[in-house]
Image 1 (cartoon, rainbow, N blue to C red):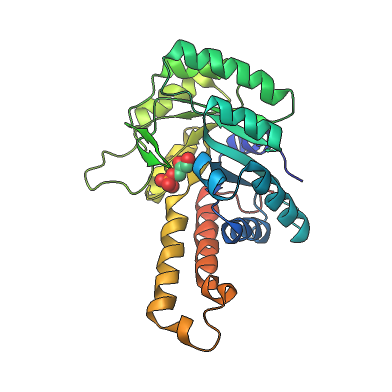
Image 2: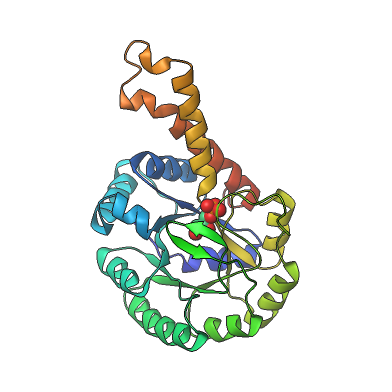
Amino acid sequence: MLVSATEMLQKAKAGHYAVGQFNINNLEWTKAVLLTAQENNSPVILGVSEGAGKYMGGYDTVVGMVNGLIKGLNITVPVALHLDHGSYDHCYKCIEAGFSSVMFDGSHYPIAENVEKTTELVAASHAKGISIEAEVGSIGGEEDGVIGAGECADPQECKAIADLGIDFLAAGIGNIHGKYPENWQGLSFETLDAIQKLTGDMPLVLHGGTGIPADMIKKAISLGVAKINVNTECQLSFAAATRKYIEEGKDLQGKGFDPRKLLAPGFEAIKATVKEKMELFGSVNKA
Ligand code: 13P
């Protein structure tokens, strides 16, 4: 059964570890993330961007697939199904469709409008027992058409949004989606520290988990980050493993073209990436 992400993230914040949000794209992705969570006895959050939701045929398909896999694969660790960078309208769609968590990304609105829309969505999601993440200060880079400049959040604005009853808060601290450029300045721990001081027990979310060095991840967790989002890194490992299979001509040997064989190395590569992240984030055996 799907659960809201509130309890798992409160436990993570109190226990000084983070739960991974792994974005899903299809059946292989979803199966790989769920099985790895189960094998490592770790809570997990499945992230679905609006673009990925559309690609998979809509939110009803996603909810049906995830619930079916949880049952069919005997997944017993806590799993949250979470809308990633949701617009106002899509938050409502996911609340209706059976997601257990949503993110309202109102970071591109003026703060007063972000506050107003977030307040309304907090009430709508909590009425159904669904957790809600909000964002202040845009995350840099591009994800599924959502483009952010990557500025650091204003800690006072973070407090204003955190006080609206949200369950966890994404705050820009110099993190960006996708690969980090050579000249990246690193995370702003000064900003993170200031945000955590003003927001207290609120679990903080670090987007753009791909390519952040392990020591920065650990420091971010020590400063209150309890949820870390990873998307691109699973795509890169899936693509590299699939490329290798084809370059070695394995699809041309026997029935190597069978999709269950063709996609198997990519599937295993996603599992390895997810396991590595769960170990780094400290969520292993925390289910
Ligand atoms: P990456 O693609 O950089 O891992 O970021 C994922 C993310 O933040 C999803 O919201």
